[in-house]
Amino acid sequence: MDSRNEKDVLAYIHRSLDGDVRAFDWLIKEYQKRIYFTVMQVVMNHEDADDVLQETFIKAYTKLETYDDSYPFYPWLYRIAINTSLNHQKKKARLRALSLDDLDGNGHQAELAESPKQVYEMEGSELALKLKAALGKIPYEQRTVFMLRVNDGLSYQEISDTLEISIGTVMSRLSRARAKLRALLRGYLETKDIEV
Image 1 (cartoon, rainbow, N blue to C red):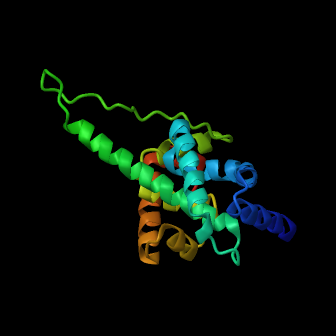
Image 2: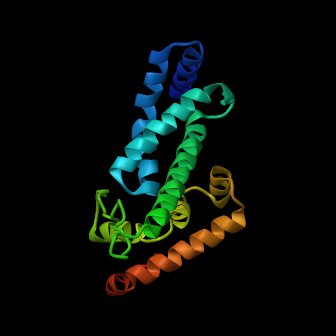
């Protein structure tokens, strides 16, 4: 984002803090597409991404007075989006664990409320589609680190700061994510001579 646009963003932030609701609407329109794609990389589901996107902007609005305008706005908003996405996934995992404990009348495990379907459409090659499907099968903590590193190009330090975890944890999760992806994609990658 160029400095002129950053000045516009700051102007809208200050107007929003002064009570101009339409100013915050401008900020939503400016960032919602980028934030949506960030969220989608974590939750891998359109419906969940819409919910998390809405929650992200609600949190940003209620915490706007804590934003330090000596720093760019997007990384601040990005961190809120990532943390909201991770919290959403943790909550979903807890609900799934609870539903696994529910037995039907015949003593069988009840079916999960949400089946793991790939509704997230990614543009690109066959590899992109296979990678997306494989990403959906690894733990979201590892998937998030992988996507922040590979898709968004964040450094280990930036990932550490964004997720509020140690650099060692970042490296460990990234290593595990890559190992699991290699295992899931082994046959396909060998035929195409591709490294993950």
